[in-house]
Amino acid sequence: MHTALRATSITLAHYLRQRLQADTSLATLFDPGIGGTMDVYLKTPQEMDDIQAEGLSVWLYRVVRDEERLNAPPERMSSTELKRPPLPVRTHYLFTPMVINKSKSTPNGETEQAILGKVLQAFYDHHLLSEWIFKMI
Image (cartoon, helix red, strand yellow):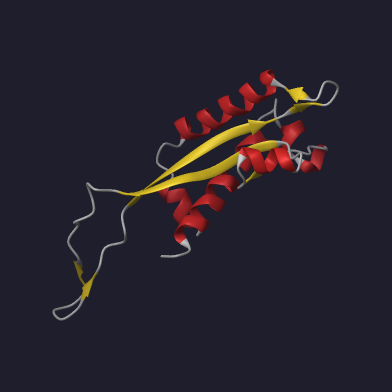
């Protein structure tokens, strides 16, 4: 159980990296095979700013118990064995594009909006990622 949060975050970052690299308008930024230098980081926006990293921040900023599923009954494995259900949690992520306009040292809003739009599209296209995540873990 203690690795589930880390594995989920890594899987989300991997999924989003693939989607950004596959997008024809963003591949030149994210695909290292064609010169892209941006990446998807499991860092806060401030940490990315501190190291001057460009790309997408995927930051797990809140984990709370899922009260609706907290009292789920155990699963009966045999007549003498019960398996406790997994700890139900809700994870909250902040997705922040970080793009610096090199000539002005200011954020590049147009590119940041394109990246954020692709993130939203990726989640809209695959609103149930559980099957995909379990293949990765």
